[in-house]
Length: 56
Image (tube, rainbow, N blue to C red):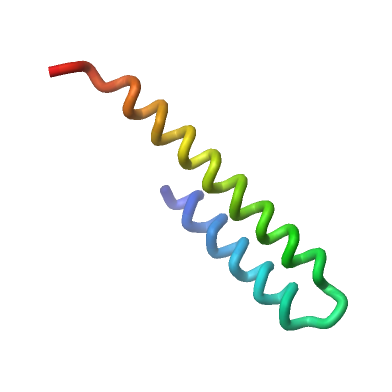
């Protein structure tokens, strides 16, 4: 869970720097890509965790 939060903070920071600093639009794009990949991996991880639980 800590990796998830760290990557979210990193994506937000890259996005803010990409918007504020002139000529660094690519950092905004990188921040968005990191954010989306983090959400995808977190969703996959949650899906696998739910599949391993035994039925009642």
